[in-house]
Amino acid sequence: SFKRELLFLSGGDFFARKLMVDDPADADSYPTHRITIIGEFDGKGFIGGASQIYKKGTTATLTATPLEAYVFSGWSGPIQSQESSINLVMDSDKEVGVAFAEDPRDPDGDGLTNYAELKVHFTDPNSADTDGDGYSDGVEVTANLDPNDGSIFPNEAPLIVDQTFSIRENS
Image (tube, rainbow, N blue to C red):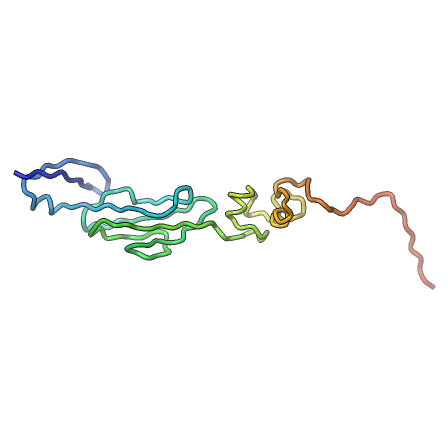
């Protein structure tokens, strides 16, 4: 008598259950499949739906969610897509690639990307002048200054006080 250990899904929830089957033909009628995610995404985003075992023929939904300062770039493998959520028919084990990239947007127009503002300079990506000194974050970074310190921008116009002058009209 042949015995085999199987994993099952019930009601859409993941759990492991051991079932001993006497007939190998019965065991083969309940195959399961796994999804393996490949790519460098640690610290850049996370994938929902990937850590499950799926019964053959079911549909797996994978959702990529970028973390702050990153954007989702796309899927590779059995489905090529730039949509953050995809469906896979689980007719075999799947190896799916995922990619996230640094967020290149610049909503405040200061010349720094969201990634640079949030991860490199720790400035506000929605304020062109984080420290309020009248100089944009991008200008301060280009000058190798701290865009978070409003007191250090060099070459400011000198403060002129107590000077008198007169204006004469030509006749």
